[in-house]
Length: 49
Ligand SMILES: [Zn+2]
Image (cartoon, rainbow, N blue to C red):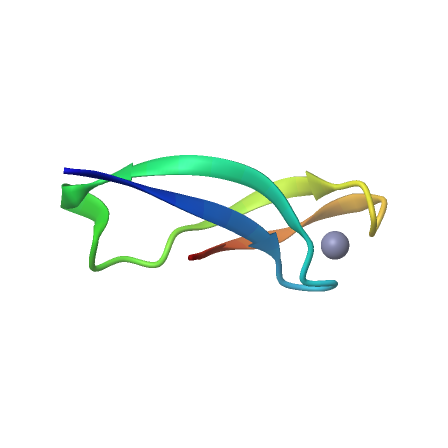
């Protein structure tokens, strides 16, 4: 089972990335360091729905 999720910047709250997550990750909140164009730097992005 595959679901869609967005990755939101934890600093400004912008949803900058869309990802798909497999069922093996359903209990984990995904956190990735990605570039946020609004903050202008790499920030921590967290999975949202
Ligand atoms: Zn940001």
